[in-house]
Each structure stands twice: as structure tokens, then as C-alpha cells.
Length: 300
Image 1 (cartoon, helix red, strand yellow):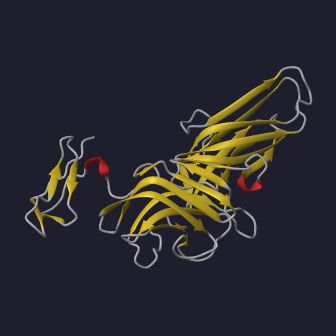
Image 2 (cartoon, one colour; image 1 turned 135 degrees about the horizontal axis):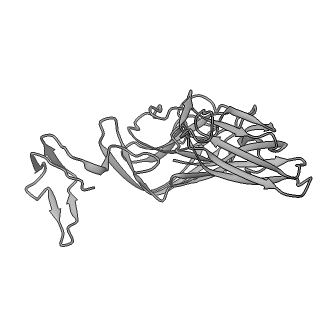
Image 3 (cartoon, one colour; image 1 turned 90 degrees about the horizontal axis):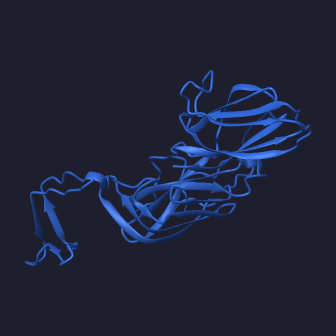
């Protein structure tokens, strides 16, 4: 998509030099005190502000300890409340979730079973970060007017809130310790269930899909089929256009097959309740007999 900027006139406020210059390669430079009169229109694909899927280059959000998150990127577009954009380069900030204010939480104390949205912020000269429960309106530190939401981090599910260890690279997030960490467990059961709803607490409500890690345990019987179907909205069957992710295995001869683990990628996020993505699982009577589902990652 081509982007255009249309203004009535461009003037230099300090001297008679040109306000805009163009080199032989077509690169345009705006002098620092160039001003535009009239109404700017037609920004095309640039947009206003940045989200988790645009506006940055080489983003990494890495939670290295329970309450420490390092955020780096080559560059990112920030916007203020008037829609004015500011590009910042070589971002490298560390966010401490035990503090409040710049490079901490925007307000309050860290809570369990929550998703915190991370913003890169700037006051005109200094770049930092904050984490907020709000995906749209964080409380900014005094003097900081530019922001861009770039991702987020989740907390654990028990008393004594800590951030879950993991890493986001651009628009994909993966949790560490996923196979054994009950903090990323989303549901469990035995045998057959029908449209059993569960909340995926460690995923952003703004994500497009998540990655399910399924673990089965206990003896199984020969000549039986194990079947999992996980979907983003309730439905009466697997063919009702609910985009189910399915796994199925038929055991031919052996009894006592034992534990199995596998993954179901790209489970769509269609239904959100109180800011938390919801999902539904269907299994048959032979499945398991015991099974656990964990969310080990997601994608914006």
C-alpha cells in the first residue's frame, strides 16, 4: 500500500533554508523546525501508534526472573494522545514488576492469574517501559506522553504473584518450563467430556491463537481411539464451523500403552470473557484415561 502526506504548505520557521530536502536516492529529510499548515491527510498504511504486529523491528520481551523482564528492539513507533508519532531506536529496558512507575507496573501491585500488557514509553528524550492490566489506557508516569503496546506477560496462578518465565519474539510468545509447570495448566479431566469450557488465563485477549500441550497418562485399551478436539467457541460437533484443532490415535493391539504427549497448534481465540480467552474441549470415552492441557505459547 502506498502512503501519502498531503498538506497545504511547508515552511521553515527559523531561516530561509529549505524545510524539506531530498538526496539523489530519493531520501527525504525534514529539518527539526519545519512546520506544516493545513490538515494532514492520507497516512495510508502507516497508521497511528504501534501494536503487537506492527510498528517495531526485531522485538524481544524476555522474562529472565520471576519479576524481571528485558525488552529490546531495534526501533519502534510510539504515539501520543494526539496521534503524533515518535520513532525511538535501540530500545533496551528492564522492567521490574515489584515496583510502580517508570520501568515497573503502571499502578498497584502484581496480582496472580493476570495478563499484563507491556508498553514502551518516552517523554521526548528518555525511553522506558511499563506494564499494565489495561490493553488501551495505561497510567503513564509524569511527563511520558508517547507509548506503544508491544506485547505482555502473564502471572502465576497461586499466592505470591510472579511473572511466568518465557520470551516473546516479534508476535510469538513461548513459555518456559511448560511441560511440568502447573501455572500454565488450563484444564484437565478423565475420559469423555463434551464442550467443556475453560479459561486460558496466561494468554493475551488480543492474541489470535494459542498452542496447546496435551499430556495423557494411565493404561489404555487395545482397539480404542483417543480423540481430542479443542476449539475457540462452543459447538455441538466438530463440523459446525468452530475451527477445532483435533488429534486422534487408534491403538491396535497393545494394552497399557502409557503416557503420551503431543501439541495442538493454532487454537483460535474467538471468545473472550472479562478479558480472558475462552476455549472448549471435546474428548471421547477412551481418551486418557487421564489428561491435562497446558498453554505453552500464543501468537498475536
